[in-house]
Image (cartoon, rainbow, N blue to C red; front, side, top):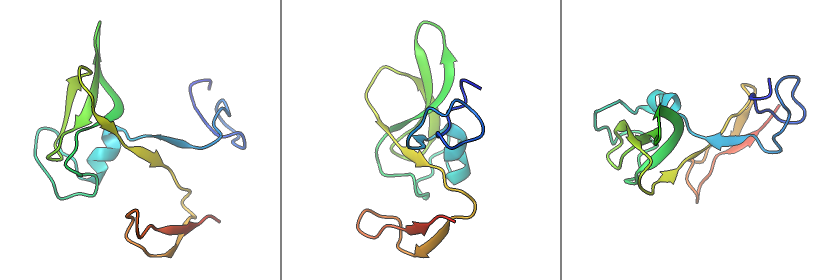
Length: 114
């Protein structure tokens, strides 16, 4: 229960979060279209930049994390060099898109929570 980070209004977890925002996980990348070991630059997470997920793949004396490379390939590496991160905001299933947009900075989705 102490490791389940939740907001103060939750009935579960540690209630430690003010804003429920986290880093993307490797399984979320896979759901979006990332494939381990295969280049796929045709899904929305690809921006021609390497980024780290929060999912570990190996740990001894050196940490290893799952990454998405600049070609959209899901892979893993030891944390030796810089890379970006991608934030994730989880929405309730009752959330509605009230203004379509396309999800970009200049034309974002507008949502309403119920």
